[in-house]
Image (cartoon, rainbow, N blue to C red; front, side, top):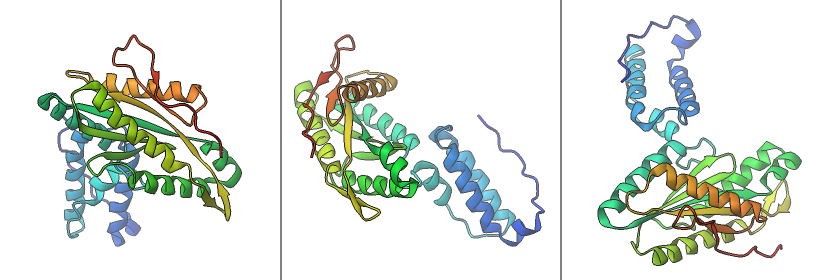
Length: 252
């Protein structure tokens, strides 16, 4: 455990005249650190925030650090740290209730070319639009996260304990997500089309969290290797290859 440590007094005149800049700088730093530190360390970040508030006699702002540290700065979706926390809880509930958890890893196809041709601003606009479309597609009870530059994830909790029934449900959501990405996006005044690939894994009782994530990423790799614009679902037995759950979609 990291012990609370006394903080040195900040004497820089520009900073002390604008103490809220200190809080914003700390929030930005914690955002970059979010993928490195587990959720359990956020209590120590809260201690730092409280000290800053007392140092400069500011009103407490309890939500800034935690919100920034757990959400993607571009799309506002949960990031990898919050996804892991939600996935851990979902798997624990599923094990107690005899249910399953579905994990979808969605990776955009052709995204790199947009960044190269149109620049990062256009790429950011595309990611924001994709996040909006996926958010309107997944179930209300699901967690949609932005876990990488052009990678999203969906946690589907409380699926049926029967593998085939759960598979039908998770594949239906995966198909809707890939279809949601397909419509043209207007960037810099011109229409562009993105595609997406997805890897799916279903939990079973007692399954290790790392194994579930590895299975989903492996299925995603298989989908990308097969040409993209499709999803694969990891087989229930690790020794069996991933199952192509949907053929490639026709190009528009």
